[in-house]
Each structure stands twice: as C-alpha cells, then as structure tokens.
Length: 247
Image 1 (cartoon, one colour):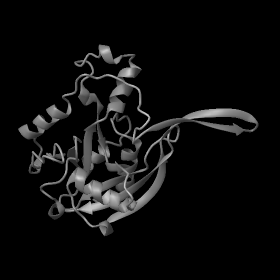
Image 2 (cartoon, helix red, strand yellow):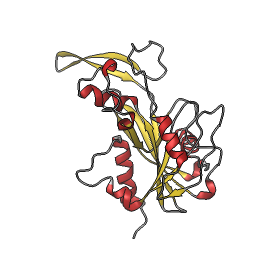
Image 3 (cartoon, helix red, strand yellow):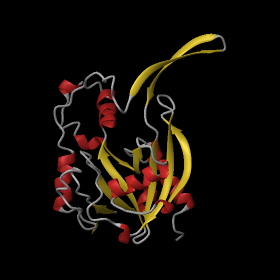
Image 4 (cartoon, one colour):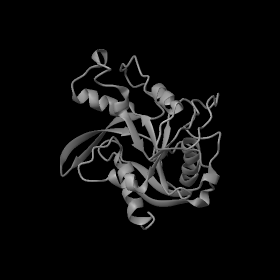
C-alpha cells in the first residue's frame, strides 16, 4: 500500500502543500496530519436545527392494506461516489476521514454517553473510515460534473468529464432516507495530479491512500472487519470484477 498526503487543511489558506508519493513508509508529515485529524475533544450532542442544510427529519404517514402506519425519515442530498484507478502505478485511490456518525455508533452501542467518554478506550481513530471519493449533489450542475469536482477536491486529480464514466445508480439508506447515489469510474495518471489540490476543501480533513490490487482484494475476504460503508465495498467489488487488470 502507498500513501499520499494531501495537505490542504483549508480552502482559504492552502497552508500545507501535498507531499510526494511515499511507498511502504509513513513520513513525519502524514503522522502530523493524522494527529490533527484525530485531535478531537469536547464531544457533546445538541438538537438538530430546523435550518440544517444537510438533514431534515420528518414522519411519513401512510395506509397499507387498510392499516395506518408511519415511518421516521431523513431528507438528505443525493450523492456521487467514484472508483478511481491510477493507471500509471496500477493502484486504487481511496480516501480516509473521521466520521462522527461512526464514532457515535461505536460508543452508543456500548452505552457510553458524551460526558463520560474514555478517549483512551475510544480514540477518534476508531471512526476513521476508508471510502471511495464521494460527495453530495448540492449544486445545479450534472452529476458527472459533481463527480469530476470531487476527484479534484478530494484526491487532487484534474480530468475532463469525458473520462468520468457513469456505472450504476442505486438507493442508499433505504430505511432512513432512500437517497440516490450514482457510482462513477475514472482512470487517472500521475500527469493529472495537481500540486495545489486534494485533501478536501474548507475545513475537511481527508487523507488520500493508494492500494495495490492484491491489498485491495484482501479487503473483501471472508471474515474481514473494515470501517467502510457498503458503497465502498460495492465499488471495490465492481472494479475487481469488471475493470481490474488481468494478471
């Protein structure tokens, strides 16, 4: 596995430039960034504001076979995800980031409340997920253009939309939101890399990681436990079945 550190800590400052590709080692700079990503304190909960731009809860009422029923739902944005394959070095490009929902899921399943979290027992890195490059559809542009922007902002590759291939559309969160996600596939090269891009925008903290194909296959083996969403595993399996170079 190789690691790329994309150092854009904020869109405004662009304070830290991306580092060179590093094979089979972890440099001090990545350790420093991981420390910043996992430097999380003062965890507490609060009510969801009515004007949240991302999540709107509501109750859905209906009658089924003469019986009145209801279901609590969330209105969220549709989204895109992209399987990225660097053909120069024959590696898959993924992203890692801290996910509050995963952290909450872990501690709440153990009955832990925010005011009593043992941060040594529950360090933030337990909720750092590995995912496909992805993003919500929150602009009046095509889904393929959204995907192209996410490839640039999160992973630092600048490619035209005609190199971003739509694969399949499906529904995620069918018990809570039913939002649509579109899976794309993109092949990139080292020549497409932009030195000033990648790592997310605004206050995002994203690590970009590369996987050898053999290492990526191990992520799908029976018995594997991985902190990743189903869309990651689906996209990875699709790639391995349909586009992975034959050995």
